[in-house]
Image 1 (spheres, helix red, strand yellow):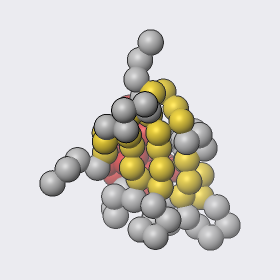
Image 2 (cartoon, one colour):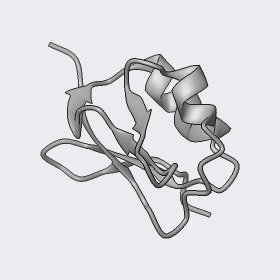
Image 3 (cartoon, one colour):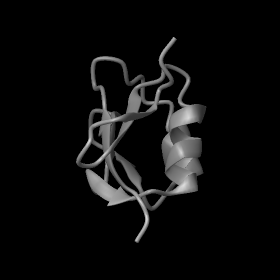
Length: 77
């Protein structure tokens, strides 16, 4: 079995660019305030979700390994 991720969007950072919904349409939705949220907070590790996080212009998407909490994205500076 592969890795499981916890996916979260920092709503204080999200600017509603919708990049995530274009890159990973099954994983993200915009709400009525035009802010992103994950469809499922816990999901299998997925290249599309990682690409969406990397494509977010304000790095509002955080991904961590479920269980350990090890950060997958954004990378530590």
